[in-house]
Image (cartoon, rainbow, N blue to C red; front, side):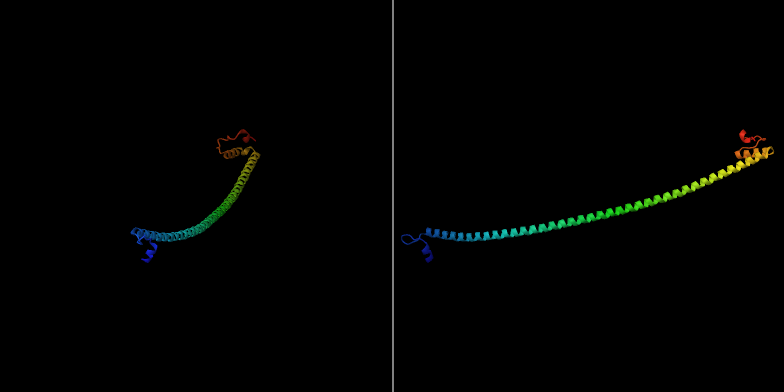
Length: 186
């Protein structure tokens, strides 16, 4: 009551009116609310500041993590591209080796075929030479026989006619030869 008496205005008679008391109480409540409100604003300001610091810290951590992830992704891409390049080089080397081996095999086959064809050609040439020599010797022996018969005279003429016909593959008919006239003449 004393505190109230000090702060409450009194009327001329020294009595405070009820309206004034209510207003003073309301004013005092508003002052308390204003103090509480100021304290709440300070706390909200502090919360905002700490929240802003937390957001900044979190954003910085996120940036760092993103940078690290980007760096790791870059490294993985580099490793993958390096592995791909090495695989391509190995594949190219395998193809090159395969091509070289194929070329060597083809050359060897060509050389073998050439050698075989050369040998076969040489055999054929030898056979032709032998056949030519045999043919010439047959012609020579035939020529000698013909000369000997014509040198023997006319008593061998029927026999000679027979031999000439046998050579030509024809038959003998009453001493008439199927050879041309120059071949049967002396």
